[in-house]
Length: 285
Image (cartoon, rainbow, N blue to C red; front, side):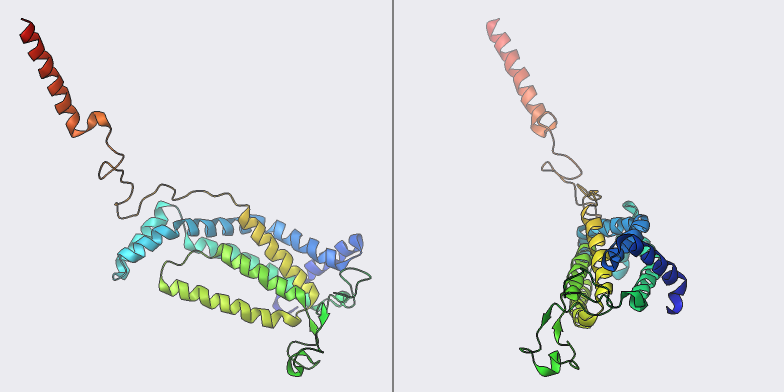
């Protein structure tokens, strides 16, 4: 178990207790992952709320970046002022992740070395995913794939494994939901690099044991659902840019449009009406 022995051993015990009830290690892995994610729900929700607020503040940050693109100090000050205005702390999103990391790595280690998963099927009686300690082996593609890829000594192996691809797909959706819109070219490049890294992970995960893939799929699906079910706060709804130019109505700077009773021509109109009444009275006399 390595450094995460203190976390992995209790999780392994819980996994075996769930298996004693369900008699299926696939279901036990899914329920254990749900149990762990449920216990970490307050931290995960806080992380999702921080990601949501960052996405809502992204248009304001983009305007500040464009306004002060040649002045780093003013741009940083404008972003800091925006964060303070909306009570946003960028470092707050890292704390839940750091707390969850040992638990998730411990669960990963528990699933990767547990010998009870060997020859344990996901669905009894079906050849696909008949060994949770090995790849799921959906389709034998050795006959129509290049030998250096699909042979038993090739990189991809003789079988197409679908669970790793589903895992990476959920990870990409999870990343897209949590990543804020880029505010400058540097962030845009970083997000493009992360997308290419996901493709790289897909090749790395192709021969990952099916039990670990079940963990990744369940955990990522929980994170996606947690983010999608989070209500929108509208933190910056109706707020103008931080430089004070926003919030103008059609009537000019500084607020709502002028009503007809307060427009410059309203007083002249009343004076003209009063003068007309006086002239009509004089004619009657």
